[in-house]
Length: 284
Image (cartoon, rainbow, N blue to C red; front, side):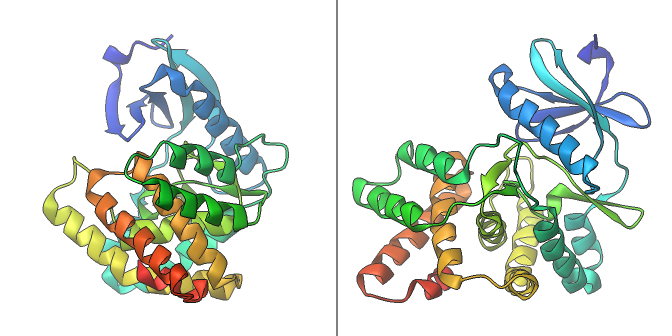
């Protein structure tokens, strides 16, 4: 068994700490022991994706460390796509094109993976959001009911910071929030993160300004590229934006919530004014 006090901590994320095991492996330790089910899902999804030839870090073993769930996985050396965008702005649009194609490519069938359905999770989370009054909750729930089911693998937190570029390969990391559903719901969530980039406590104001500026700059090109690869219905996209925005009112960062509330209110007003839902996405 591993003694964390003797291992080198190399990174910390929202849910986990990453420790160095050797040159080729890392240990991803979830902080909350109650997240075991999520970690197991992450492990099996990554294994399935790897078996299907998708570019994700190899996973070797699921273990418990200090009564916390942990995964031993491949160590990927490289830079995140976000850092590449910031360091080499002349590559910005080519990276955005890759981002769109990668997200659609990796959203294979969730058959046999026993993932939580995104619509089911959304209903649960939205019921817990205190910032939504009863009228707004009813509006969002009605939107969820109108949306189709799906059986795609939805990453849950797909953005340039969760893609590592190594030797011309693009590895998608951090599958903690994976669900099953329509891939368009995942695309909508990525679009929200670009248009309304949350401020993380460990990130400086300047870093956040750069990241949010890049996000706003590429958001239109990103969604256009997604639609070119696989044409989708703009009304459905708009409705998924409402649902994912409402979800983030539960688990998102404080800095993003005012804009999310404003977006949902604008969509409610547009709905009452009989404005076509295929235009609501422009209100974000």
